[in-house]
Length: 203
Image (tube, rainbow, N blue to C red; front, top):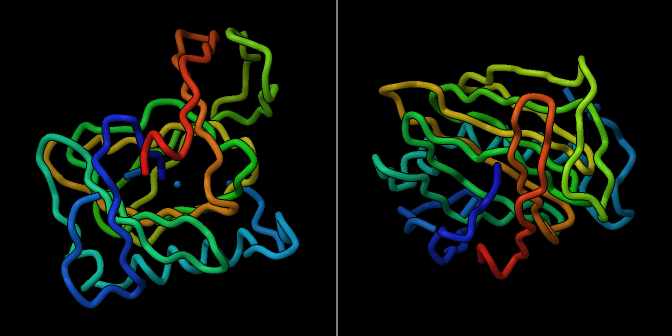
């Protein structure tokens, strides 16, 4: 979302564009291509177009309840059966390191500024607990309001609101809907798999 966590409350689904305030509910440069990740699903370019249009919907963005202590979120109707979220980020909050398994995705900042740290490396899918990263795999970018990005499968990143005073809001979409999220901790060059979350952990 960019990603839900087990502590998140129950999600509420609202259509996009939304016409009424939504209740709080969890939780997004890769190549933007025309090939479909799954033949019947939206492309990453279509996901990016969706999150950009949603981020420009002032009424939708204003409908998200903001909490000074923790992230808030509302589920949206994404294109072509995708999973989409509107997420609020209080100052100083973030996702921690995670990936999105076999889903492709996109996200756009609607207000405030988000920082994304990512790894230019494809991690093994299973069977490991600790990896030592090579030098030169770290990437960082700031995404101010109106800026977004798309990404492919197994994208490893963390998303942060580094402001000490300003909320950020963003829109995220994934296809296929997230089958799992792997969460990692990092100490220097060492990445450690901490847990794997399934949809029932954040729905």
